[in-house]
Length: 281
Image (cartoon, rainbow, N blue to C red; front, side, top):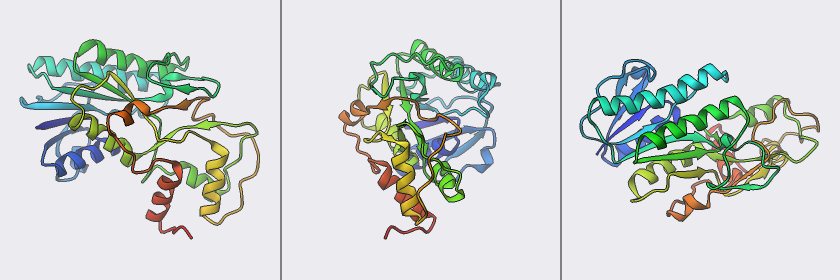
């Protein structure tokens, strides 16, 4: 099986390494292809420009793009235009993959006042960037009968340590009101993609990828402070509303047989901290 990863950044690289370890041929499209590990065949590509030839035996495509900044123009280019361009390259080269996975975001849901959201919940966020991610989903699902969307919640893990850094620096604050957050460890996000392309014969069009415990942000910050042996952060107004007022339910993904290595933030953040040399007492 040949797997093409269009947008082979941090998450795409982890997916590629896992598939290569299974014996699959993995081709990674990335602007800086020389930075990819040897197990992935790096090909220099701008997903919004003229794309290189698609390997004729491509069985799976993973579209895992990321915007360079949070402007509407950057999101339209990275998600909508790139997805449309990848589909056009497949048509150009006469390649029909068995599966195309588009890595999306649970941000498409917007504010649900703390309610659970599932794949059936209306994805009608009013945020311009979220609407563009949703548009890219529709480009895939409308342009391929073999498309599957994986909506990931906030990814953390190696190199994605925003909350840890805030607690360490003393800039973290406990919100005055409950603020629901949803997250997934980078390794679980990669494992979910591999699972969907190797273990699920007839996938649903949309899955949610989030760990098993939506949680109030204050609880996470208190936990990290305790793990770091630091004082509890003070109460205050957060500088951003990341996370959204919703609780993400990933039951459909788990029903396919997927299991989380890090089912809650506790296991996941302890693994990240252990990688930084911080050991749980």
